[in-house]
Image 1 (cartoon, rainbow, N blue to C red):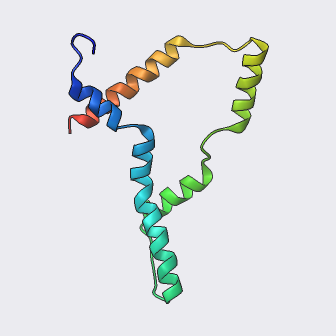
Image 2: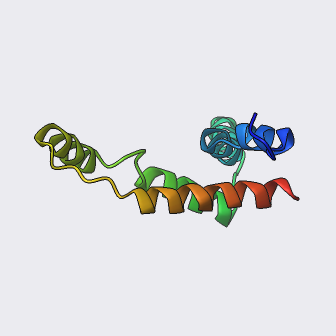
Length: 106
């Protein structure tokens, strides 16, 4: 452990991974979709909220990653032309850490 680091912050960071956050956000949508398909089989009318519809639509439209971008990066790495922007990486790390800390304070 580093000097000045608080274990509670480290625990909050470990528990707030993007995969866990995504799973928490996707669970209600998956449950609503499962209920709608079950209800459709039983003949009961089902309606989804606007939030559930928008989440479902956005998850269908967005892939997990951009395959073309991955191919381009792989080729650049193999060619030795890939440039790392350390400033952008540091900025994103700080922004993510700040977001986690703000959420942990609630």
